[in-house]
Length: 406
Image (tube, rainbow, N blue to C red; front, top):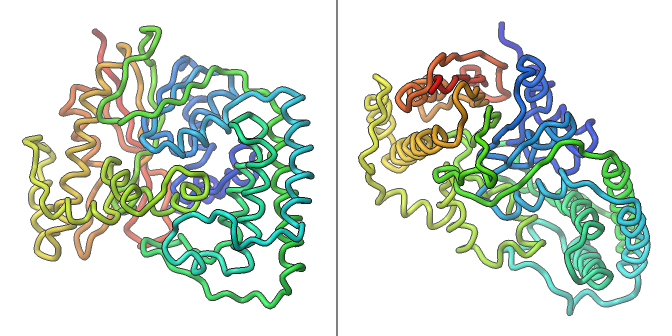
């Protein structure tokens, strides 16, 4: 029987210093990256073209391995930079000093009614009015203390993001996001004090982890994985370790919206939808109507059963059929570009999960393997990693391959 193996999920990261700074459900385990690097000691220059929260880059940096991270989402680029940076003692001290001043300001008698709030639709569904008021005051206090971006401010904002999601009513544990009923019966001052204490605790945890040096060179770049830039110094990558969005994620922007609004990376729902459309595997907002009009760009998916899979899904939903088809067309474009930035004999590792749409199982791992072969890679292999937490048929795999010798 294939087990769920919690040590191969994001939950394993929560106990590992910087890796636990901000929980995102799509994040994969540091254990997976460590295992790959331990099995392939020759790896010295890693690319993660779907870097997300920066797990691969942080593991490589901790082990003294050079790594470049790519992501199309500007918030995730910021987060990965914050997690993989080295911090000087004076910067950590400044963060501690500002923490105390910002909490004092947030707990002051300042009225929150005239303070800025992000333009999140129906914001009190996310945070009841009392919590929203404290978050607005804390956000204002942080920006007053350090108006410009700095290492110290970045650490405080990482803690602020944790507080934002911990104090929200949103639940992200399934595809259709839901909101919990507000249970709080605390008085305003009592609740604000508890939020301030939690923010202090989160910030101190982050400062403590930030004191540990990162030995490897980690570069984080905002880029589209379908058009991978050449490494700046001309050296080609000798490996890829990554976990792209799974087809059944449906939206890459969904879980990131609260952070992106509060930190100013989004100002309205249209921006969120546009970014989701640009990402591989996005269907949020206007992306849905665009998918209905999408037509194949001529890329042929050579997996023998691909066309029949798409047509089976189409009998239930043309939208989802287009979504799955576009997803793999985008991945094929990615593999074609990837080949050109890899050194001969480079090894690649993709952590992917299969998906099910209605009664149709989509063997993502097998289609990835086929696309890799289609784009010139050799020694393609599929290893079953674990059972996922949802339907019994859904598993996680590592699909590996090698670029042939020139």
